[in-house]
Image (cartoon, rainbow, N blue to C red; front, side, top):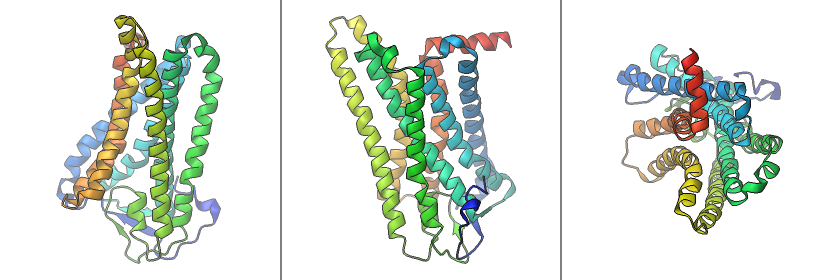
Amino acid sequence: MDHFLAPLNLTFSGPSTFILMGIPGLEHAHVWISIPFSVFYIIGLLGNFTVLFVVSKEQTLHKPMYLLLCMLAVTDIGTSTSIVPKALSIFWFKLKGIAVDGCLTQMFFLHSASVMHSAVLVIMAFDRYVAICNPLNYGTILSNARIAKLGLVGLIRAVLFILPMPLLLSRQTFCTNCIIHHSFCDHMAVIKMSNGDTTVNRMYGLVIAIVVNGLDLILIAFSYGLILRAVLSLSSKTAHQKALNTCTAHLCVILTSYTPSLFSSLTHRFGQGIAPHVHIILANLCFLLPPMLNPIIYGVKTKELRDKVRKYMCRR
């Protein structure tokens, strides 16, 4: 991972290593903070790998909806794994140093997985729209092959959008004593270490955040607007409930995915009186809570998946 950017022959002016401070102001509590971090990470890994294992083993689950669940699980594993191992090495062993190319690589994988995660949620919203509004043609419109192609488009979008971030930063000059007051290489945290003009970097990060989050949320809202219109046109209350139940898990995942990041973004921009360590903890929770909660939500709300998981657990 640290050598991802090495083939690009990037040159840096300044230090070859950054220092990640973890959670400044709470150094004395790093070991205690590592406990929930570890628990959230392990639960997330177990849940998401369980989804991947069960879906891969069960032929009856080889459907578009479960293929999307696997994509979601992979992005969840990617986001949490991008930050937790390094954070724990800081909390437990005080290994605060990280090579500049390693820092930029971590940034690339973290933000790429986040953008891909958002794309999967959009595809899931489209999947629910087709399932409710055009159920007779569901298999024709959304085949496994088409879902895979949409996932590939989402991956390409993530790479193309995020790759300029580390490339632009690689052209910056950095302070001699580069101490990043964070537990991972967040884009804005690294920008603050630069001595040069970072206007382009800041503007690009802001544009990507608006385009990705804004556009994706608009597409999700539009899909659910069409779904709501279709549901309200049904005469039977039972049909209302059945249709809405198919969306419950996805709506819960949207809330767990976007609410922490939105709250973190608002406190970062408007909560000047909030202590810095609160911002850092919230930023970490944005990448820890969704990977832990998402497989639990789908396990509870999706009977077919729940039954298959129970079958394997009973075998063990």
